Length: 395
Image (cartoon, rainbow, N blue to C red; front, side):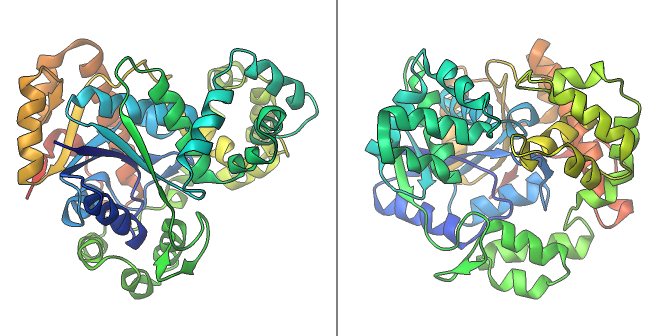
């Protein structure tokens, strides 16, 4: 059975996502399994609508099974995000291919870039360029250009970069999945609307600006219906602005040394970040003060979120496969997964039976969800223990 895995955020799900799934079906996919970010996403932000609603959108729009990618991986660098998603899909034991969107649509070129980035001497070559004060992304591209020439330009596009990280992660697996890339259609990653497709960032912008009908009109009908329900219930759009003071309060309680654990590059950024916290009164101000050409905003936002959530480094592999939503085909896949010994979590109560690392992570994720819900527009919806009460949506 050809089972295709997708690592995604669906923040929110848009027409381009649906077309990708349709293309995979046309190319022979018999089932689609998604490893989807939970409450927090890779740019260091809160998802615009909760993970339960986003997983429902996915299943109603073409996916068969949605599994949660927990926060230590979902709110991390592209490399960690990719590694977590790949390992989660591999551990299902049923996924046979990994599909991802890219601006170039050229799998061979991306594989060549991944091979260069995995070379033992590559980190040292990157460090040589970093000493010139450029961003990590620019340093990586320049180091890759030594071997790839102009073909290294594929490292300037966000979906290409993430796809190459997926290929790197696959190469680390003993039994890697086959890889396929689908050329991205419609608007650019941070663009508006093109070819009838609005980017997720543009939809978030509309939703948070109160332009609800404009946003819903650009979403797939089934996804728009779910979003409309969440909006009416006061659970969307989730906005970190509502939590700004709470985040700043947490940051102000931290010592300079406390920030060191969140300085992923060990480059001394934590000194600069601590000074920014002592000078600013909002998260936006903190990020603006700490930002330099070398430290992009996404990295700083992840640092804020990691500190606020007291986020631990990502373990080697996700210790469980939490089901968020499934349809009939997805349920058959779950049966196969359980039969083969995969650590599937369908009911929150089952986490105690997993014990150890799995139970500890789920309990932390539950507390993080409790913080996430404080971003709901309707405060009375922000009740605790949502993760303990929720059961997978079975369509």
